[in-house]
Image (tube, rainbow, N blue to C red; front, side):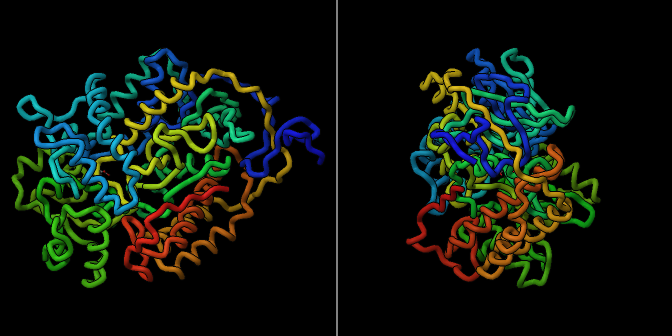
Length: 540
Ligand code: SIN
């Protein structure tokens, strides 16, 4: 079909072969907002709060209820150099060491220097962190040289942050939240983001949300793995949507596995916070031996990726499927006060955590990579921003320091609003129309594909990887490449399509990186190599 000089076809709209569904923006309802924010964890809600309090009109699109987020499940806490014996410099150093040579130092400086102010903002708007004698109570976690983790209700820090930000958002007349709304695809032309196509799960209708700024903060992608700590919404949607639209993604091979996730038949993969080890718990193997002292000077508080690999080595050498967290030497009062949620959950399965060893094993927890951004959250597409786990400003390198993720969401969410303010971006974009009507929907067995995908990721793209396994994974993703177009918008199919896109990116990057570093471990290349002290950036 003939195209004009701007790439429009003769029907005068842009046709890009990679949308998930057929649509024509000229026939759809269209809304205009200053900020269109996708996702309702800490990054999305805090950005909405900052923009809303400046009088900007903000819509928050979220695919289930507002509080279905990784933030809500976060236990351990939020790291910030607020203690008297602490400093941003020490926090900087610890973050870099955990990041295994791949952190962007400028991004980390911003995180540790601006973090304390952002946490104070949270306190100002009502976040109730635990206190001891009037002072903030700070705990320790792996690879932190100081006690610098704020927590709330013992081990329910994320729920407190989610509560206060949700409350704030509901109070702010400038912010509208749309639950049960699924972001489908970005509308991008000539490197500029014009808006996003959104599917309303309640009505089955599509709407175009045009915004001066579109912000992706959809969280992580733990659901790509059979064993994970994430809520079911974590299917990597933001990364997939951005990649399909032509944005750069970075560090996709670096998935963080959490060392201690409850491993009991019939029980959910429930996180047993790193703060438990921070307060003194030991890891023991099936013979009751404390093994971390053999693996690292920091023993149970070594960087997360080190602890995971030590556990895997221990499981292999003892022919076991779990190791145990032992709190029995700790004061029962301290355990009760600090870990009420963990205590209650374990009690449901007959475990008294003050006495009984807790069976644990590693599970997928956090994505270090994501949509590549600069220090202001800008992606490679103009008008498109990303923050939180969806984004990759380079702050976590190859392995995130514990409790830096909530902080990352706050700091870079705030910087997005500062950046947008600087540009004074109004609705100045020329209104372009977009459509897709050419591709035949694929009636595919998406449920089955989803289950297969999760098995493939667990088997071949887990904490230990090989050339052979990664090629098998890529073969799986290659076989499903033809699945470009979903039949039922809004259904699980769309998520599966996103999972296929993102899983393929992880496997591809992991195959490329022929070394081991941080969260990426190759059995066939077990050492880190200087020549690999660089990032893998993928772009469609
Ligand atoms: C935890 O509580 O162990 C999780 C905290 C984190 O992922 O940083």
